[in-house]
Image (tube, rainbow, N blue to C red):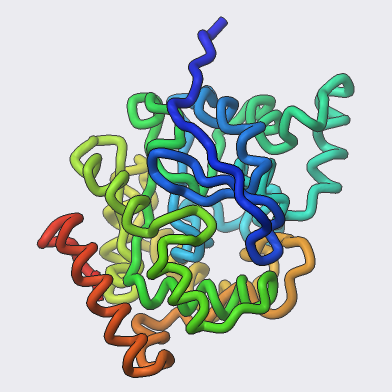
Length: 310
């Protein structure tokens, strides 16, 4: 039996944040998460990865709906059924009735309180695509030595606009300036964008980590798919890659309901505009300047050569 490790963090309980209810600040990274995270922190930290797993660990709303090598499934099965979003056990953003039914059929004695997605992922016999928005320091430390991981990064202002238009506008009824101010203060669910980026960036030379930039995908999707094809060892032909590119075209994804998660109480489109820099100029000149200065300062600390900072 694998020895269970205690995740090296501490918690500060906080009052309600937007509609997330009670939250905790996870130290030392100051990552804000729903209070329910404490129950699953050790289970996620000790999650047993396999050699053939592919992990997609990104900051929220980083354009993670694109998949390679499984077009047929993507056309017919919902995202919830194709991907193990382990965060859902504490976020509860995806509808869970199907998870409960599937877990009961696979393991009648399973306890729902042990995490629906975590248990379903552990029971899966085939290759798994595991998705999380948690940063590296909250994941199993052995993950890169066990399997391949993809990290998606993108221009910060594109991220803020995407989050506003597709998520917090519905869930939190928050304004775009309020969301920008929230990030400037460092008080946002999943914590600091820069902490998440840094945790990935400092591991960028590991052979099992492949970092993709949303902007690179928009500029030359075929070039990025070729790199991803080589990294994953999927051995798709050029014609097959072209089909992937067509399938993952923003407009096609937006029109296909199986490309978006089956979310709780979500209204409107899961997808925003798919355009680089689409949020620029939507803040007041003063707030725009503060965000620009904040982005430049933090990107410089991360790496002077960090791309697409602003």
